[in-house]
Image (cartoon, rainbow, N blue to C red):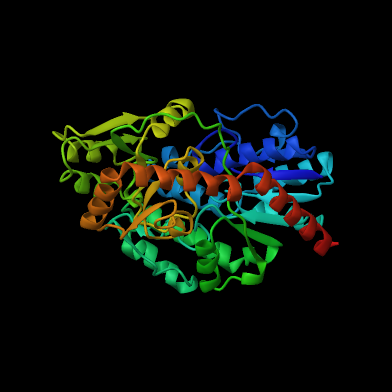
Length: 415
């Protein structure tokens, strides 16, 4: 097959971008031709076959540092429709086509759904893997950043998107929230979903929320993301738990640090990652001898830290879709203490691959952590079961078989 993968960033930047790069390798290993469509970026990996067709780089945060009407209008025009991206993909289809299937990932804001029309014109089957709730929520994650709470006011769309600027949910900014609401409203008005042949949802939860929002559930297929399964090198259990991920409000790390403040002093917590609230979190943990901030770690460094942890923690307060950090823990045979929210309980099965706690409940988080800490044999057995889940449900081979079957079925239905 000749497969076109579209994702805004073509370098390891966040879970979706890493997933697309790994998917490309996986498809090529099966003998398929893979082409990429992305936005030009200083960090982009070389892609000589198609990079000349990519739209130019635009840095929204940099543009909006100068808050004047011209810059705001420039950003709004780009997020609604990128003529450059549309022209580029049209040229790509003419010069490099035909393609058997186009598989989209994170395309909003920069590439924009304007790339759909040229694909539809050429009758290319279009599949879109949803990595978040961007089509439903102006702030992408159903968390109001201003108050730090879950918010579903915009779920059904339409006039409800006005709640975003009224609540200033995105970055606590009226302007940022208004632009996000305009973008979300535009996608609904243009009926973007009608231009997609099939949506792939990594979790049942995300698919259910899209159905609740009015999307056609018949156009959704649940396929979990995949994770590499490394050879297991047994190491002694360390004396720490690990949080690895973005340090941002919706991830619930503030609750984690608050809960850990009342843990015994010899129960250690390592925090790997960076993000917008890192300074706030370090200030919260100031003086706590059992909390260690590691900053950004390269994948090999992170795996070594994770592989020696007693368990990892996923304390999200938002509807996380299908966290790659949980899959990586399972692949390494490390159980997870996860918040019972979003797609997390589909992965962390209580008493099987880890334990669940009520999101934001400091007492519950602390009690479950103590349970895992006090029972090392039980915790180790959970890790062994978690690894079996990774092997039997999240392996690259299983994912390849499912995704290629979806490609074939979608192509057949289109023709």
